[in-house]
Length: 312
Image (cartoon, rainbow, N blue to C red; front, side):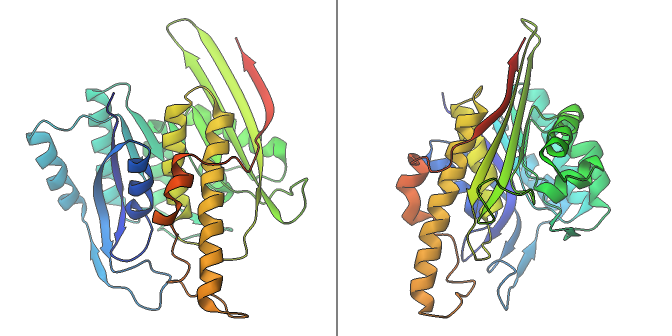
């Protein structure tokens, strides 16, 4: 069965972020990807200079209308990431609602990009839109700790807090929630960061419920990468598609792809920068094409620990 994804994200001419980070890996894994570029920039904004255009809510609507008029608006998945405009985000919500009506089994993968490390990098008026309109439509949600705290109004200081926050997020809509990074201490030491995942599936047809919670210790890399969150969300889409009832395997494969891509990137960047020099943003662009084999068939380097599993 052909699987088609509508991905509404940023585009850069040079490098990997947004749609550039998501499209190639999804295509390599056999998905048809239709991209709407929310912005078109020369490069990501971590460089000294960047230029480009921003797609307005009206222009987004025009593109969608074109797809609709040709009756090719049938999708199996929707993927969204960074958005900094309230009317654009609300238009995305309208499109998702319409596509879900056309295909009730459509899966919406949402990375609610709002900020990190205690600071918001989108306007604050986007939070209620995410909370009240976007998250309730999402099936798979991939926030970091700060975004999960913003959405639930709860702080995460312990693993128990994290589990409670994921359960609160389930109540808001999504049946799969992955906290992509947290500040929780890893049992493996300070060279690791902790990610957690939770999947609650209720089948109305036979009344069964499955609940799985997992935890992962991910090796840290001392560099700032851009586009990794976009790659993470795309890989969660792909691997949950291949392992729909097995969050453990989907997360292991997702995190392992990330590890291979990042390792290849940092090795290359350090070589290019030379001894004792910090790599530039251009040198730290993800080595995506070079990682094709790892994306298709990742060697598992991080094992997920099952915290709880239950089915009724």
